[in-house]
Length: 173
Image (cartoon, rainbow, N blue to C red; front, side, top):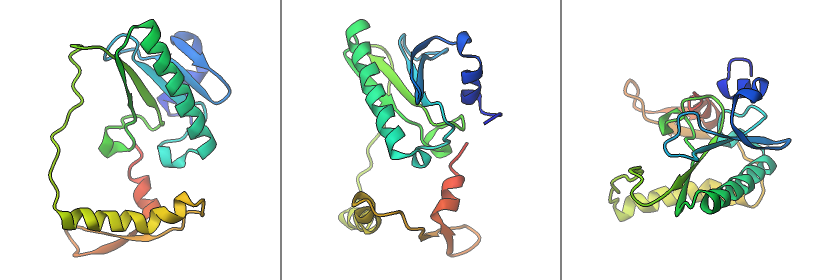
């Protein structure tokens, strides 16, 4: 995609600190790392969000992410790694290209990825489980995803129906 900063990296690869590349993906050192060794891994083909990536490419990305994580443990003496995906604008995704952050961690590195858990009632947990199970059983059995209408709350209307795929487009930065 011509206006994607991540896609432009492939045109100017020599300007970046690439640590791994194959036919499917590229891993490079982040130019403004949270800590030394902070690595970005992304597919060469343009995919804005995780849901658009074919399973075979997703599998490959996570195999590579795992190997990079092992390298960071061994070579940088990391004692942990964070594997972070900001998937959609509301999740903090700033660029319109899927990528995985692999961040080596050490004790007292001053990074904080903690959030305060919110206690939910049993009824809310059961309702959430029921909603997810209704659609997930077929997906995990390998059945093709069926477009469904979901109910969304809107401040101007009591309820409106919105197609999930249209809602997914709103997540793309």
